[in-house]
Length: 463
Image 1: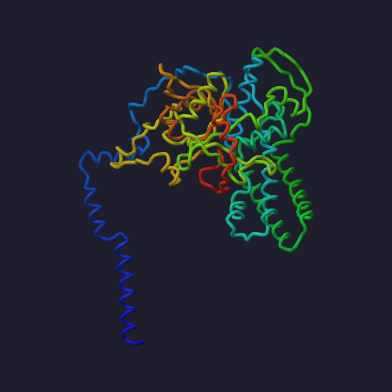
Image 2: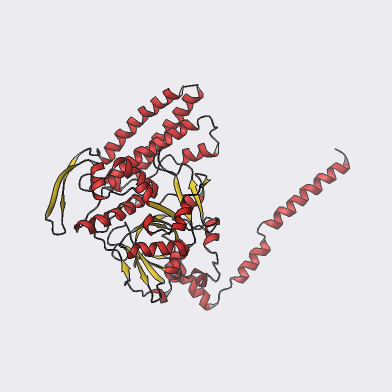
């Protein structure tokens, strides 16, 4: 190698080495950091307090300790449900919205629809959705973004409202005492691992068959055979769904009002009777995208031939106006939010000022809702039933209350109270009956939606 070439290589390596060192953490930086952390007596006391108590306790804002539980407008309900160790908040929330009308109309005592019945068919339909999507995309390589997403997400116990509307429309409803919960429906972790493994194995089999030139009709036949095995697993875990049943409607004192034989479809038509697929519209508050536009999430549905998740993106002011109109007319709503943010779980109280980590740690956390979404710091994680609002003398909301599905001992008697400021920052979705939606917004819902990919980070299913 010539001298000039050797010199060039040496200079290049030296430059890269110096550049890398300048971008890493140096001893001089560490010395400066240690110097900046020279503790005063008060700072040392804080260090000791955090070490013993943790951040959350010490960041709690004492001036947020008191809050009232009065609401100017509240939809009455009876009985708090409990999803236990399952991710079925979306299902409990949707069925709680529907049961409130039954309780009010028939003056029943505590009444619930069977979550287990709906969940059985949810899991069967999601299994078919996955397997058929594998067949539909069998010609794509394994590292294709969509194929990769499918195998990462073969099935879950999470969901959203369009799943509820599609499932109930197709399979109807039954009361909870006709198909009660099982251990597995209340504790889904082990089942989820097994069913996901089985579906992934089946997906690989279908891809290999397609790669070998298997005809579509034979792939479909194989898929049906696989679903028969899935069905047997579901029966073992959740029980056999009833096709017919006899049930007695009782008032709040337990007196019988009627006894009839039903099918799940006839029960749904008698006690709900709504066109869930067309009577409700989902709204999103997502400031990262233009408002007054309609969007749809690809493959975000529970049934292969069902509806993709479709919503209208709106400013929070429009969403609140519809929510208030609905509550004033004694109608609950499906709501989803980032429930864990600023949550005082003992009191069931959410406020944007519940915890001041910045003051405790000597820094700031200034991101707004848009920035939190963009950086994956916040997103919808849980669905609950919006049932109350407290309005001031000018008709402006001060706080809101939801019926939760974590049992009656959680929070405020099974409920969570949210300040209006928290509502602005951490509520993302609301499903509203069309009769509470202004005509101008209904027109927006009829737009051709912009299709978003299945892996869009804002659209995780509620757990």
